[in-house]
Image (cartoon, rainbow, N blue to C red; front, top):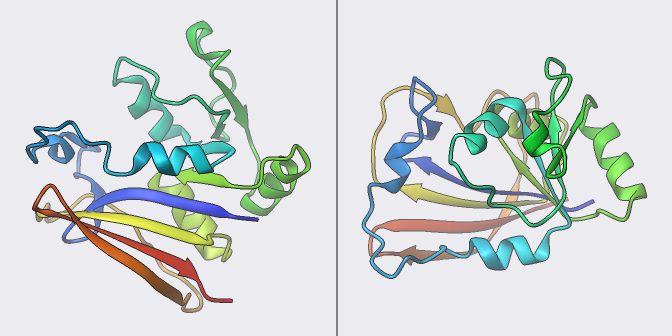
Length: 176
């Protein structure tokens, strides 16, 4: 299966502020323009799966950062603008159905991105790997990384690194 999360969060657990903005992610000086392990992570995955809100946020960046197939999970978005039709595909599937479909298409290692989508995959216990970078800021409110679960999910710590002298990146694998 292999769905993975690679994401940054504030110290208080938010992935975006209360207005959905993520500019605070760029406030840490990065003089060497480090990718913080993102390129290595992307080299291991077969496809990116993101929610509609995340897709809209990525569109606002002005450049397309992905070189892998991208699937936008949405029940409200019916088509992509012409400039994205060759970059992404809309699917309206539940997490398990999505995994089964993509696995049949030889896409096993999936990068799951977006708050609501991540939470839906976690509620169904479909995440195998978490790579979470903590940014030293308290937002006080916003879009939380984690939501309510019906049962605890246990993960095994793999390693933790300090990046740019201020970010803490931790890697976890699901214990099954």
